[in-house]
Image (cartoon, rainbow, N blue to C red):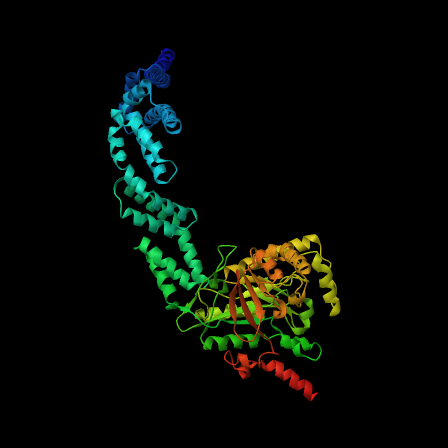
Length: 632
């Protein structure tokens, strides 16, 4: 019994396990049936969707427009009725609708293009298609009508083209709601074309403010299509202009162009009246500006050479050179600027005196300066930084520091290399303006004249300069340099980097001839021409367009002289001669000014007594060295 009982219970357990498996099998069968049904339904759905586009295309090709439109609308209804959860199905249907619309759009655009470009007259078949496809063709033709009116407004199509298109589509009842109102506005659109095109011309030049102003002016005079178009363009331009205009305005503030910044932010404040940053920047600009008046009177123009950065090198017995009398020390130039500032002078851009938009005819412009100020032009003479002046304690080259500021680099009496912003006239003037922002009118700094003989800014930038550089180094017992083409390319890049920074900070540039010709007045034209060709190829190519010529040593050529005409024909419009008293005159397509040379030899000139007090200017280091020399 025991054995049979044991066998019975085992058999009973096995029976229980089989029942569980059967239940699981039934559940799986149910799921399989449901999946099969879903697959069949989805398969039918896919087949239906796959057939929709061919059916739609065939119906259009066969002229069964009602069938095509019903197919489109049925799918559209499915989209509208679909559950929000059926995203995949809706995406598929929406793609079908988009494909159908593109099929119609392609055919409509073909018809419209023929009407516009070829004066094509609509056939009965075209009219039947355009009218029967109802909302599909209506939306596309409406877009073409608006686009055509925009092009008419912008001067891209002539009025007869527009009226012919309207004549073709307007009778079609499907388009009347759009065409009739627009057709009535064609005369207003035509009237506004000139102003709208003026606005777009300003925009093409990047003059966003003028474009918005013009569109705002037009918008105030028109409603309907023109008014709506102006609203759209103003909104688009405002979105485009904000960031670049703000960046430009902030850069103007950083470079002391406060009057330009005031104008810019004043205009932006009108366009963006609620913008707090614009209001803040405008307040910042106006805190450094004052009333501006037209100036009629003398224009003071002073000229300095490289500065003596190290007085020990310049005036010690070991290094002293008589040529130091040709240069000012850093201290002397700083004191001259202080004296000029205290006497009410303000730096101006000499190019503000002319309108040179016409290369064949120069127009005079009245200079404007802050009320109570007197204009001052500063010229830095021949900033090539020749090796021949090293013994005078001048800089050996210009460099950029970590803050991208232009500095002078020189060797002191101990043979150490020193870099400093105020080692050269550029940095001295820049720093002075930083301390006294009202010393510049709208960021003007000075004019840097450059030659090509030996170097530019202390860098050998052409193969022609190598021999001259080594000759100058040998003359002061310094080793010669071996300069490769790669070195020249590197040097040119360095000079262009410095030029870019200087331009950005208000400095302008002038030629003083390639060879720094001692006496242009008595130099033959062929020599001047060859010299200028070298200057353009080797130096001018580093500076971009240069419109000023500083005659070396003030030996100018009369403006009617054939040699001066040659220079004018090469783009020079402003010429500098030399003279202790202020003088400028307009000639035939040029402006001429005299510059007053500032050096230790000239500081005592009576003509300079209104500019500064000589006793305050002379560097004690200069006189102290001379006194020590006498006592020894």
